[in-house]
Every structure is written in C-alpha cells, then in structure tokens.
Length: 335
Length: 94
Ligand SMILES: [Fe+2]
Ligand SMILES: [Fe+2]
Image (cartoon, rainbow over all chains, first blue to last red; front, side, top):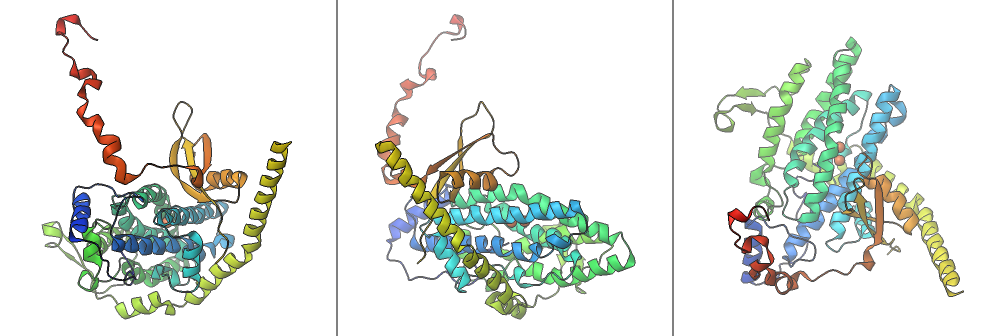
C-alpha cells in the first residue's frame, strides 16, 4: 500500500555527487547488496526513502482511524477482539516504519509535524468513510490484501531497515486479510439485508483499492528510478494486475459482483497465463483524495492532531519523571 | 520544535538457549517505559522470553568506510580454517 512508491515527487535539490560515486552505488544495488543507514548513499536515494517510508508509516497510523471507528460496535466479542488486535498491529507497523525512517536522519517529531501540517501524505484509501460493519470486512479483504501485494516485494527492498520492517509487517498482515474475508463471507451467506450491505461496501471500496497501487506506469514519473534502486521491484500496474487476478475469483466464490462492467477474462494476458482486463480508473478522484479533498481527510488529520496534542502532557510527564529518577539515582550513587 | 524522547534499541531472546537479537528501536522517556513499549511493540505474538533495551546513544558502531581495513585482512588467512590442513583419510575423523 500503503506506499506503492511515492505519492508526489521527492523534494530537495539536484545533487553534486560525482558520476563515479553514483555508478559505484548502483553497482552495489545491482549486486543485490543491502544498503545500511551509515553507508554512503546518494542524497536522492535517502530523500526518496525518507519520503516513502514516512508516507508508509503515516498510512499505517491514519489507517487505524477508519477501523477504530467500529471497535465499540463490533457485532460479537470475537470480532471485537480480532479488530482490536488488528488495529493494534497497524499501530505497531507505523512504529516499525517510523524507526526505519529515523535511521536516515529524520526525527519522529519532524515526521509527525509534517503529517499534521499537511506536508506529508498518506495513502488515499484512508480518506474514505467506514459506513457499515461490512466495510470492516471489505477493508481487511481488499485494503490489507492490496497492502500485502505491495509489501511482499518491499521485503526485498535495497534499504536494509525498510526491508526488515516489512518482513515483520508481512508476517502480521495475513491474519488481517483472513479476518476481513471471514467477515465478508459471513455477511454474504447471511440475510438478504446483510448481502446487500456487503455488496454495497464492495461497490464503494473496489475502485479506491485499485487506486492504492498508484498511477499507471506511464504516468508514474519517479517510478523508474525507484525500480533502478530496487526500492520497488514491480511496477504499479503489475501489482494492480496481480491483485485483480487474485481477488476477482474470491468475490465470485462468495457470489459478490465486482463493480466494473468492463471486467473480462482475457486468456492472452500475463504471457498466455490469462488475467482480467479492467475498466478505466478515475484518476481525477485519486488526485482529489490524495490532496486531501476526500470526504474524511479533515477528520483524519483532526483526529491525529487531537491525539498528538492531548498526549503532550503524558510525554512531558514521562520525561520529567525520568529526569527525577535519574537525579535520585545520582544522589544515591554519590552517598 | 518539541522536545524529543530518547531512542532505545530493542533486543529479544526468542527462547532460552538463544542469544538476544536486535529487532528494532523505539522511543521512551526511561528504561521502565522502554521495556513496557518493547513488550507491546515487538512481542505481540510470543516472539520473546526476554527483552533488553539499550539507549541508542550508548552504542558505538564501526565506520562502514573502514569496513575494508577492518574485515578484509581475514580473507587472506585461510590457515585459520580447518580445511587448510591436509590430513590423510586413513587417520579418520578429526
Ligand atoms: Fe499494516
Ligand atoms: Fe494490515
């Protein structure tokens, strides 16, 4: 996902690195060597990673909000326990990722401030509202499913700390998708009203889920460089295609219909293995939502700001307490 | 700019008999909170039976630029490995 490459361009100026330095770095990448935080690296490589890992971390944290919205209204204790565990995992994912970004020289506080003042982006998917319980099932199935598609190749990303964080994340994601699909399955096999509710949720989340993979390859300008640096391993369109091919049969299994009248099996796709052709994606909507015009964008940032501001006294108190304890220890040691 | 909270490196022993292994880092005001946070962030699925937290500032690391001078000399010392020495098969396992 939550960071299929960068949303927008990495900032910063053109570097003054020598051709030799850049070529030597590229040779390390081509040899599948991992780059570690203290290694010499091109400024643009560092910048791209700071932006991408930051966006990814923010997406995990903001992603807790649409689902957190349903914890108190989960229909059973089992569903509630699972949803709580999932949302807690997403918080953990955010923390692993912030820590990976910090190895590149940004602070957690800087990243948080960038999110709160709108300089940093997060995945467009979390700017949609969760209107019914069925949305929680659909999010686990589609949104976490799309995240897995994207995150598995990131486990082999050239930057060591990002790759290691992704390995932890991927281990935890599988339960997210399965609990979501189980919710969807329960509703799809339930009453007429439940079937309608889950079909409605699929109708609303299908296209935004496809947008999670980012713009088409032809319109994804810095994608080439990220591929060259092995930050990403597959193009946006490749991963989107994999996701569609994996997901459509799962919908058919439940008797749900994917809201795309142009969706067709094409036996010649994927080098003769077959795959689905799909209809046009509304990229105007994508950019509107990324730029914060989604129905929930203001709420999301408001909620994050409230959490940050309301938590300030806790952080201050913890630091004051730590100082007091350290001082007491020093006095005891001197005695 | 807000005051920052110290960074800690987290090491987990998956089970007794194995060494503690670096798993990641986190921010916490002191060692008590760091241990608590490490438990929540890094051991949600029984990943560990013991946790170490170390202030990141206490770690001294070797310089990657010095990797060649530090580590390359070992490559030309094959006599440090058992296979360097020819012992007839008749002697048996050694
Ligand atoms: Fe996640
Ligand atoms: Fe997830």
